[in-house]
Image 1 (cartoon, rainbow, N blue to C red):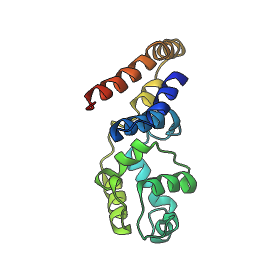
Image 2: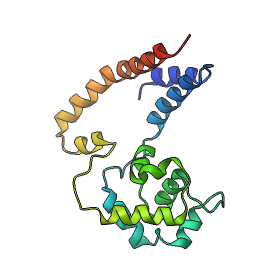
Image 3: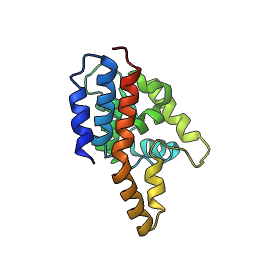
Length: 172
């Protein structure tokens, strides 16, 4: 990971415009959120793991509720998946799994409805947020080296272009 981008994003955290700070947070999260090793699992596979491990039961749901409000946030679920059934999702992937419920705290009934719906989905090749992970697994060693070199040469420029584009859209 390029430290120049991290440094630039960190400096943007002090910007007075909230949108700029949010972009900085998103960039920094993309550099820190490296633990999406199960992002390639289908929704059906994850729901199956939840059901078979007991994670989709009321007691487990309550155990994951860190703040005791009787509801589960996407963050609490992500943490619980990691701790209880050793499934590590990136933030984006957990939001994809939860769909519309990702932006709010959910009651047990809402949670179990999502899990059941995901479990009953027909098995198909799903487009997950981390397509790069799946693509990278199918590359041979030489292709991986070329891909890594390409990102090393151009990745920072691409991210900085995005930051500059967002900055240019903000009022001065």
